[in-house]
Image (cartoon, rainbow, N blue to C red; front, top):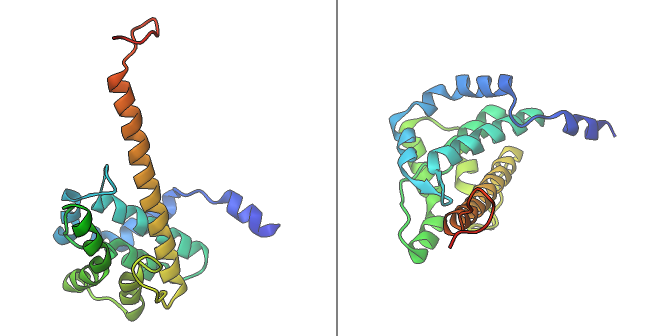
Length: 181
């Protein structure tokens, strides 16, 4: 019963934790190679930068709540998709899906030092989708699950927004509420 009370009191957007995350991760978040992700679409209406920032913050926060190494979780989560592939059709996207953890790890190592836990988190963040080997740490499981949650939320949110936007454009109503022809 005590755990339920704790969960009910957790706010996903905690100002203090967000400020701590931004302070600790400032060098990475301002790095020019990391910010190149802003130019790459991911999950339809999102950028790879926005996705990486969300996964980074939520992984940091959840790991902190669980008493885990939240700095490693947040850092690896920020860098988990640090690759510059662009969409180019289904076949290319499937190849990129399998390859991007290795590319992200290589790119991350080119901009900062990573400990073994952070390397494993990045390399295994596609666990159960492209690899059967799970992450070696609880932080890796947190990042993997947060990544899947954020990706699902972004993808479904984009589809729903696009669907409603399409209907709104196709079937505008006049002030009386009737459909225009």
